[in-house]
Length: 375
Image 1 (tube, rainbow, N blue to C red):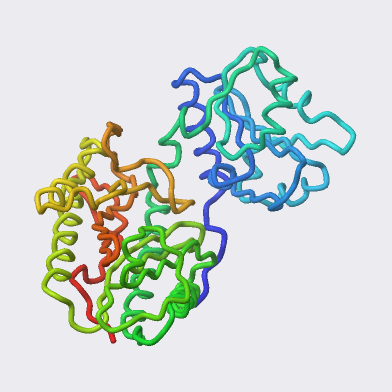
Image 2 (cartoon, rainbow, N blue to C red):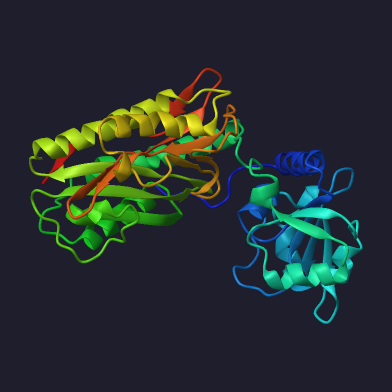
């Protein structure tokens, strides 16, 4: 089966998102939002500009004003085809004209604006030159929860992406691991994800034996052997929404220590999931999972946060980490992925995507979290 790159959102859906974003910006004391090409622009308008262009494209949002998309004239025809275009006013500009002066005319020249994290420095510096009294904050700093709470249609897409990742795991657990390179198993993961509808595969971590102690190991030429623990972490985008899951398998029978470490991580992952409920702080999820691992004597070997948000990108706010007091809200989606990493020996990680419900949490990955034996 194949997936499409565009979700079935309407112009009204995009209009509501832009209105909410502008309102939230005003409540945060911002004069408006400036959204450059990237995931925020796609989420707000449904428009994906050309991948590489030095020409300014910028969505301008401010409370009480109609949304305006400043766009190069040669790209305007495609912008007008975007699902959210009926909710936008397009302001196109031609080569040889000054797009920054045109943008400045839409704004409070002395205002403070939220701007996309991935906006080019070239454009930001030119805007500051056009509006010397203006100031800026990154969207992640100013509005970290902008995309965090998913509506019902988005949750359906997230669940479908999770189910596709689960189907991929059910297939990969039945392939032969021993005697094959990590890169070969990674290629299997990529193929299965795409066959189950992913248009983009962002990562296929296959970390065998001592490589498993590196959480972000790139699958390489190491030949997987019997007796290896193997961390699998894979995901991408299906219909524009992310999947991300980790399971740890063992080639042949594991040792008692390997079973014990895997079970500690499984218990920690369960504890993190059980901590999910509306009103709890993000850090509570991290604390719950980390307490299990620390209590078992492996605290120094859990070397990363417990989770990250996911949506139209595979890593985004909120983050499940000590010090993050942002309360959980129904509709938030994020990973719960504790791990133990023993240098020179092996690693274990177990990850599910979880969404906050009205009375707790719901896993979007449902494959077995017990240690799976592979050949």
